[in-house]
Amino acid sequence: MFGLGTMELVLIFGVIILLFGAAKLPDLARGTGRALRIFKTETKGLIDGDDDGVKDSDKHPAEKEIEARNAAATEADIQATREHRDTTS
Image (cartoon, rainbow, N blue to C red; front, side, top):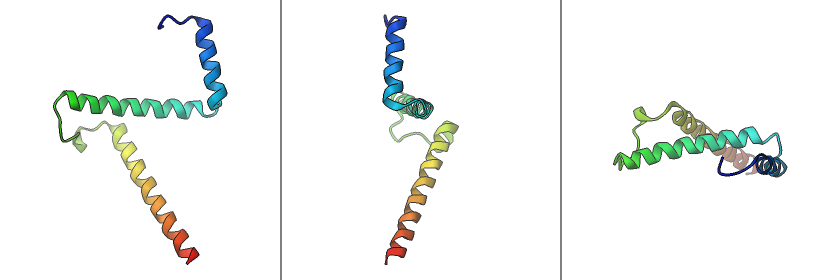
């Protein structure tokens, strides 16, 4: 794989574990996979000549889930900010 031997791969994985910690690696891999999936979808849209983006009906279920989670997180942040503002006033 890319001309790397076993020892080089072990060293790279060891450094990654030291930097991020073993507990964070699954989250890191999951986030990277989602980002790559979205990137792939967007580049496919560019190649197909889709200038106005991907329609909701054409989106991958994972993309719809990510957008729903982001919307819910944004709404929760707004609500928390409002509650904090109300309690400090």
